[in-house]
Length: 131
Image 1 (cartoon, rainbow, N blue to C red):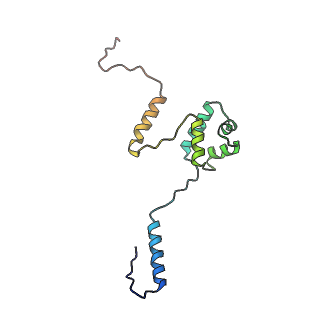
Image 2 (image 1 turned 135 degrees about the horizontal axis):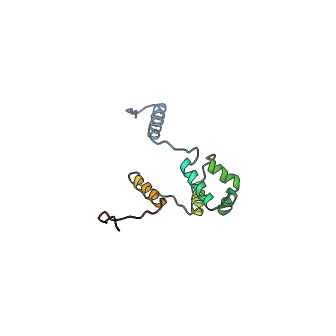
């Protein structure tokens, strides 16, 4: 940040320049993030869930009030839906979006993987082989 001592009689040009520098400096730390498409794994998961239900893109579009080409563009990553549209789509597919602290992401992913695996017969560590 550039600072100037402004005394009486400082020209308006100097004051405007200083305000301009300060405004530019305060914004350089904030960068808006624009997605070019939804993350590929999210799009793939939505597609897998749609296909599990035996739905085509037209059926999903009808369920959320969107035309089939719009669903196709979302799944291919051509467009990024508005947040409320994304929520409508995932909830119709019986999914949900969840904010998770980054430190807990591995634990949540592990729980999701464990839920997808077939249940195994667990034996206590102290069980004998005959049981």
